[in-house]
Length: 396
Image: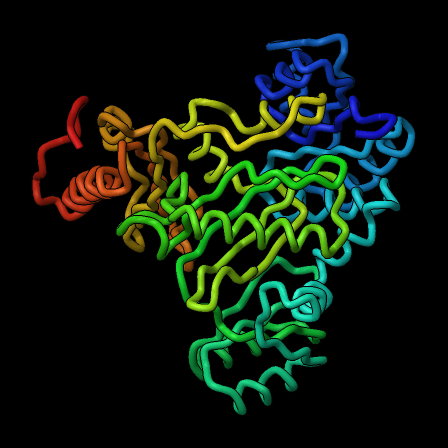
């Protein structure tokens, strides 16, 4: 891990993550908002943990603090647990400034044009792609090739799928001037792959089925129900990408599509998986992946934990103009057997509306789908006033 491999900088960690870092013997710095810092002081309090307080939503302030701390104390490892894009980008910028030896690999992963060129030239995950310097160039290209196609902007993790002229008009109306990368649309089951790299060795620590690869009614399923051949192909493709860009240390989150021509990388970022995926991993394995990552940084070989069950996430849309769900309704869902989380979130995927996020477990993808269907049916009945039987312990 290098001279200072036993040092880690945690951003917005929960108390149990700080405990795990201390237990692993890591010299730890914790960066939190003022409110979280007070809660931590009262609830835990480790003398081996240095606390730093900053507004973690203020990207420039967070970036400056991380760079100063990292350079002052020789820390290269930053783990972060918040979900905002401002936080993600601040940490990624800080990693580039803290570790010059990692900077080029991080730049390659963050630039879709560079990453696709490297992959195509190497013959790994070959995807038809063309660079476009402006919005007008993208629109012209879209008029010359079959739709759908995918538009990516450097430094922006968002990906726009243009399926028809209406999609193109909507995208171009709000798009910034380029450059852009325009790629063929990849059709097939989608898999989110989490890796941890230590001294250039890439270990896959989780594969999650996304959307079409998940059971009906679910957005995510962990572990992804792949054949041995598909799992090996995904693992080899992701490791090849990380080798090609020269990634030597840290987490990466890679989106892979299982096309008819084999696994193809849709995107990759030097960041942890989202909170929903981390939650599914914890439910399915009985282990917190953050604890395993910290143990690996302390010298233990990283590995993909064994799943003892499947875990799936679904979002139940709230009708436009509907009031907030009552505490009784949400508590009823929580009381249902095999339900692990019920939270109101900003909206379902692809919409701006609100939704209720639900996580359930099961012994198989089919059983997970059945349990999600039961929860969704009761949820819809409650919202349409059809008088369905309330959720109780042991139902669903």
